[in-house]
Structure formats: structure tokens, C-alpha cells
Length: 124
Image 1: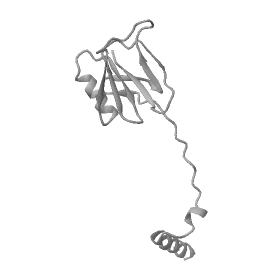
Image 2: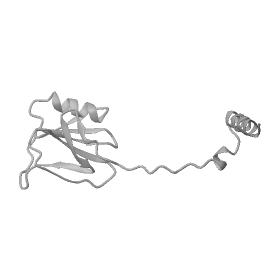
Image 3: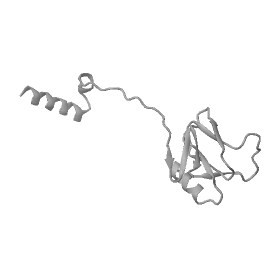
Image 4: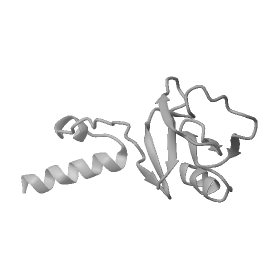
């Protein structure tokens, strides 16, 4: 009987937006951890916090990288799939920025800053 009364009081408090359930319940604080998006469509991630990079010493030419307006990571991957010669893409999670790479992505570099970048290469 006491359990039913307690449950009823908790329910009543929850409905009214009051009560102390949050004080008597044991909730663990979740630990959120950024992880790689791994494979998206036919592309493999170089890891969260990476920038795409060409061969050392190679200077990117106009047209090697094309910016696209997209609404999501998957939309960026699909834009790359639909673009002839696209070898991979660089996606900025913070603002949905998308850069299609039409030159070889031979390596990746660490990305620092608020943009939360991730480099994806076409899977072989």
C-alpha cells in the first residue's frame, strides 16, 4: 500500500511539475564521447577531428576542392558520389560545411578549432 501511495505522489508531482523524484532517484551522469562516423555511403572516415590532405608538396589547384551547400553528412557523401572524379570529402559537423575533393586524398591531418571537421575517403 505504501508503495502505491508513493507512486501516486510521484506521479502527481510529475504532472504538476513539482516533487522530489529527482532527489530520491539515482541517475548516472552520461559520458558523451565524440566518435568517428566510420563508413558513410561508400566513404570511410579518417576519424573525427581530421582534415583531408593531398600529397606533401602538392599545391591544390582551382577546382581540386569544391564547396557544396548541404544539410547533413549523408547529403555531403551523396553529393560526392554524384560528382565525377570525387575522391572524398571533408565535412564540418558544426555548420554542415561540405568540401568535395576531386584530387587524391593521400593523408589526413589533425583538425583543431570549433568546426569539428572529419575527412572521408572513397573506399576501395
